Amino acid sequence: MTDRYRSIIDVHIVLWRDGLVLLGERANTGYGDGRLNLPSGHLEDGESVVDGVIREAMEEIGIDPADLRFAHVLHHRGESGAARIGFFFEALRWTGEPVNMEPHKCAGLLWADPDALPPNIIPYQAAGVRNCHHGTSFALHGWD
Image (cartoon, rainbow, N blue to C red):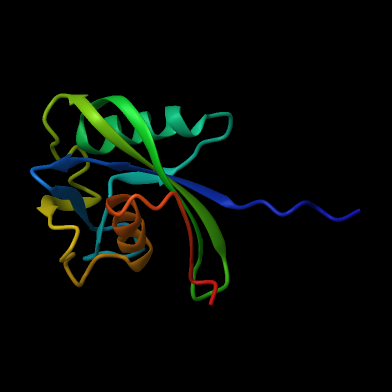
């Protein structure tokens, strides 16, 4: 009997303000340092995707999201062939002001135009932002 395939599950919080999306610059992580991404992380064992995205929002940007709305799921395959599934949730309201809670892993936060994303955004994240912005609920990325 072979082991079942298991994929990494990512959770992403999408905050919109005045038509802009919140991004953070990765630093000192060993992956994508100097590149931009949404506040996000891996789902922990025994955690729902909703609980995971709330935890990541609180850990990374210090907000308590309310009125979460599922926005998008992205099945991504990287250049190495490894796959992951990303769940993107929009916070329609939140308590607190987004701040960089992890300066040892994030060089700073910025609000970006989803129609003109900075060139240093991680492509997987850029696809998720664009799909959320355009109301696309599901997409494949990196499978062509």
